[in-house]
Length: 165
Image 1 (cartoon, rainbow, N blue to C red):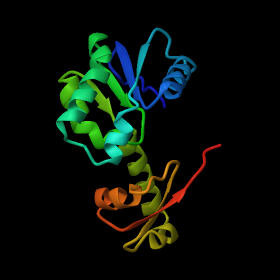
Image 2: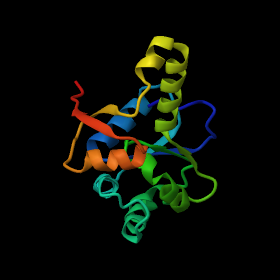
Image 3: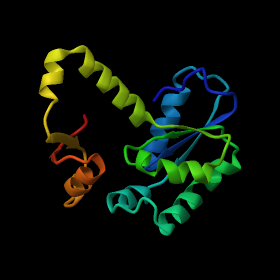
Image 4: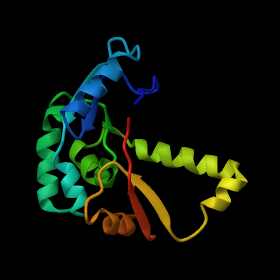
């Protein structure tokens, strides 16, 4: 995760899925020469199962998001990085909870844009990407993840387990 110098001055926040993610965000931010930039992290482990259940706009999800993000709101952060692959699906809830004046950074958009640009530059790759089915690699495949992924993406998907070294 990189912190762009184009961000406004002030404290940044990172929402992550667990304490290990919290350590990673803090270590990477401090190692990237951000100087006096204040980085706050907040583990939000219950958000992952809520997303995997498809509870994107449930009142319970909003309550949990509100509780998790309260410390970051109290710190008056100006930028929040969604530090888990599940969180972009909760972006509207998170944005409402953080309020105006907080920039939400959704890394999934940047990744999707980069992948689309690469596919558009490479005709052979573009041909391989055509079709109605997709194989996706997940680090944690649950029994209903394939169904939910198909619903979110609007196309049939096949999930394969992936390990990250």
